[in-house]
Image (cartoon, rainbow, N blue to C red):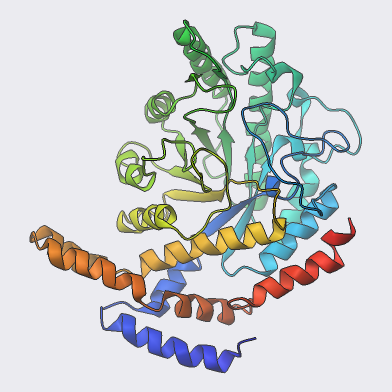
Length: 422
């Protein structure tokens, strides 16, 4: 375990190193501390939710692999797990809920009947924790989604059911934002698509547009609700065609000024989500980022500090868009300690943003504008070996958060004392 004195001493050395490049590390830490990351509740229980006892993920072109013991099976367990996660993280966090995680108290409540009262206990808990909430309609794990279509379904009964569901999630999210004093992001993702080559793509997309138009008929104050929509390249069972493609949602979001959700697992492996940020912010006011890690496909591995997360953070900071980008996690790995998955992923994203904040961007930009590409490349390479970890350790220490590998011991203890007994 590292003591604060030695951490502060090594930080002074790191501070000097960055100062030589004109970077004030104290200011970078101050900016990092204002960045809020929305923790996804579904990592705690493998996307099961609480509609029924022992509910499990089904359909929707998504799946969770692994059966590591200790997943949350009640709302109380989920809350305890998130509280533990937050205790191991510096900075600000939120909690992102799916509609299937309501406090239904054993009552059977179908998706088109959910109300604020089913989430009031979550709002009260969030207020006590001093955090905000975000929300998502759950358009999977339901009989009316088994044919692969929801908001774009040609079955009018099913389509209307899902339209009503999403309308209700917007109302609930707006109430969350109102009570907590911070706008809730309500993100719409639907699994609609075709496994094999379809002939009539157009009608499904017309129906999806019609559904969205109906959903957004009711306006809510922006200080209470932010509407987002999330595209996907393909899913299991929708390999040939996804109704809600990037082009579809980009067109809809730009024409209606909604948030576009960029999930870095939802694009072709050669596409870089970071490259899309500055383009889209020319046409919409805000973006939503769902950060995960795709390995060969949208496999929702735990986010790590890699080239992908670094570019996302760098482009956000370089575009001076920290106030225009909403950051959330979106992965679910049942093969490892779930608390550890949260902490590793969140810290990785914080590291990526700290790295971006410590970049001497204006200096490097001058070289770029002068056509001095060697100097640009050289400084970008030199930044890779600067003492980033030392600055982050100091940030953790100042917030009385376990430093370095110390958090691993904390999670192992929680597994022995809590999750291992479930």
